Amino acid sequence: MSTGRVRLLRLVVMIPGGLALLTGLWAGLLRLGVDIPELRSNLSELHGPLLVSGFLGVVISIERAVALRRTWPYAAPIGAGAGTVLLLAGFSEWAGQALLVIASVTLVLVNLLLIHRQPVMHHVIMTMGAMSWAAGCILWLSGRTIWQTVPFLAGFLVMTIVGERLELSRITRPGPSVRAALLAATLLFSAGLVIGVFSSLWGFRIAGVGLLAQALWLARFDIARRTVRLAGLTRYMAVAFILGYVWLAVAGIAWTVSDRVVGPVATDVGLHAVFLGFVFSMIFAHAPVILPAVTGLRLPYRPALYIPLLLLHTALVVRFIGAAAENRTIWRIGGVGTESAIVLFILVAVASGLGGRRAHAGRTVDGVDADDAVVA
Image (tube, rainbow, N blue to C red; front, top):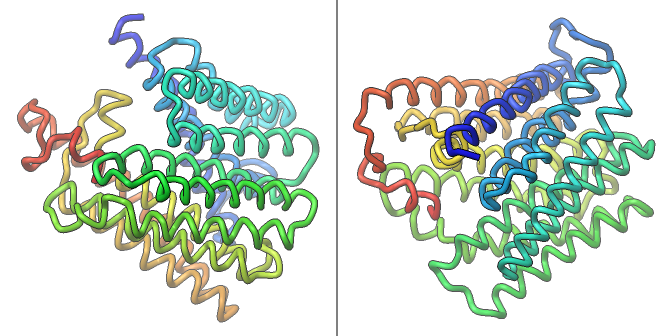
């Protein structure tokens, strides 16, 4: 398939992913108790699946398909997108769940092929992440509640990101023992997820220790510690990474000490510290590089990108203060603030992209090559 057709395919597949993002945010507002139209029954219950499987499942699957440079891996993002559309349409929830299972299993196969081509640790960890997504989708299809599948969705995103950061640590060249420590932390986290199916208390505690260990590894050995001293896009990415690692550590502590991760306060701290604090920090950081690679659309760096990033983390702190104080008003303000940060980031990104059309067509942004910025 020609390069132009491949890029067109990626853009078309991204449409349901974008729809999942917007409706997932809308569902989040419903869960916060904001007085807005529900659009369809039980939309609020689909908040997590829409954002993780519908949006990020599509994006991550496209990224993996790009890495493999074949056509069949696009069955993963297409399946995730189609499953999302069926879930939103409400015609057959079972069919939507089944398509998500097919998408996630396809992503596992893609990652296994990448391991066959290049048997390195970061591919192994990302495969474990894809398996976690598949496990969550299969559990949901089998009749488990969304809450019982959420930890596996968290595992999908955490291990995918950790694997990517390990891949980029080649510049710092961590030794075999250091890399083995990260693998051990990831295996501990995965074991906790599996144990959690049978004993949520001990499963979450074990997984929490694994989360904390991964956060500490990233804080100590990730290249962001060095690149934060640089300027422009590279510093922005490093700041976002470091803030994300802090929230991953917070989530690890919350999972470890909480009696159950689905309690009122533990839900916000234990889960949203992962999904909002950690994952969306990574999204904000990677967008200026991943978006051009996947879609061919440039997203030049602008200092204004710091505004949604800082709003995200400030609002998340406010949200958690409200949850701890059992003050729903403060909690809701913080929650709306985090969603506003995501929308603001999209607006800033669109404005930067439109402004970039008038910029030179070279590969550098503020003197930083896009390929170099990836390892920030």
